[in-house]
Image (cartoon, rainbow, N blue to C red; front, side):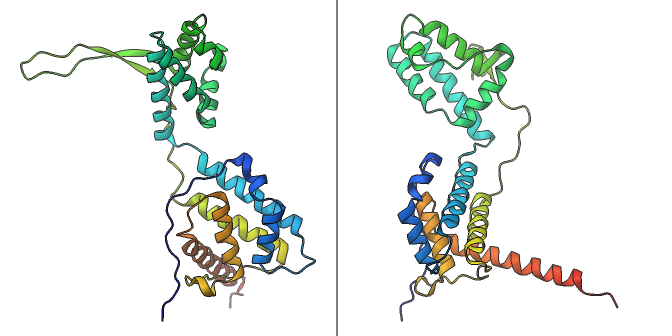
Length: 263
């Protein structure tokens, strides 16, 4: 007998936070309600509200940059800005595209560093216009860095050194915070969807999920569908559900032990 098991999916592209309302629209929420086998008088509006909030929180966590990503983004902006300082139109257009696509975390960080200096990130018009380009890229260089230090060139086999160069001191956090634990956003998404389930059904979700797709229950199907809707991989969802259920069992056991009278 062939058993339908959960297959690992390829990587997906997450939806934008601004698209949550459109993706979790009324028709989709009705589909989710049917997946959960809710009665006709169920509070569908509450399900929609809780599901959308859980999706937004998940996407915000997934979009948050860690230190290596922040450093890479700022280094790339600095390189593009250096090329644009040479007054090349092509380099200016590349810088403009990079500034427009700058992640929110990077933009917030750079603006916070430059608040005392009242410097604003240059606009596309300032960068593209030959009349304002030079002042725009010079300002952006000050936004991205706070000076530089001389770095000796590498020593050649013959004893000579390469020419020394100035390495920019980029505006990066002095304190490197550790990134979020692996899978934390996904686990919190499962928790948020479980709370949405409790709110609309008045029952706790099941503590186990089956890997066999054919006998998967309403709640696991609901969670899988929500992962699909936000564009997240679904290959580990059943494992996450079972981890969530195991944690609930441990919490319940601890509470029962704590409530047991001492004899």
